Length: 189
Image (tube, rainbow, N blue to C red):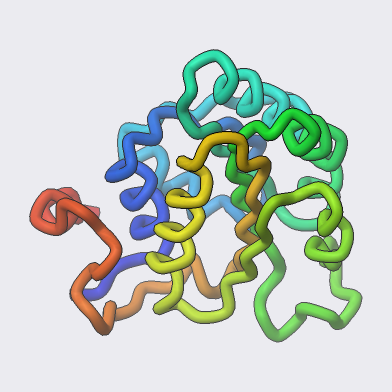
């Protein structure tokens, strides 16, 4: 069965009991917003990306659940730096999902493309850069298991737009999804 990578990403969050995503839409993540709309996860729309990460940080501290942030490439991610640093200094477990330009334009000084790894290296616990459609489930599963540890800090997943907007076959039948039958039943879109 062919699935959109964006729906795999959102349903993996749903299967890990993520209720809220704090974020601000942008061109590199609009297809993920379509999956959010169809999923039932509550999206908290902010007016600035820094507010999204601060809200996720506050949510994590007050509820002991994982706060998830969704921002777009370039200035969308750099607007989060102060709030990511705050979460890092206070060991708050938040996950920042950051859209990126298409794969072939990375490191080409393209429009709204920045080196997010080097910008945030000193203030994040882990940084994952998605490079293959088939790694989506693994990276998200690994990120969520790290974030569930006490006192971890922020984790960033940077993903190119072309990898998460495509539909593709999964090679190994949902290896990192806990309730596979429930996941398959939700795939009506």
